Image (spheres, rainbow, N blue to C red):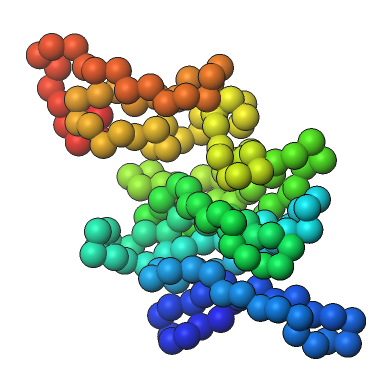
Length: 178
């Protein structure tokens, strides 16, 4: 991790030769505090890095922390970046394993918004960072399926891995928590 200033860390990946000389280096991240906790070498020579991004933005003025995932090719060029699971307290992906059959497993912990206690997470993803309930064996966080609608019942179908957004029955009081 590299800090361009005290509040804005960037992910720094570099490759060295046997003599310790830099072959290449890349920086990843955006306006939030981006940090890595673990990485895995992929079968194609690329890298999967996991950690977190946190801070406050104009869109989300309260502190947020999200599991983060970056995928590169063998030369460190960024192919994909994703974030998952917003938490109200520091949360982070702390480990990643490349699976022989393809895809990845990412693990970490954090305290979901409006939850009394921190929770652990285990997420199975395909090679592109797409996670589904079916891959994980069931939903651990319906918040990943939240469509933002106040009059829908959000759920994740454990058989298909698809999010569903059923409209509430007529005369059902709608709240922001639905």
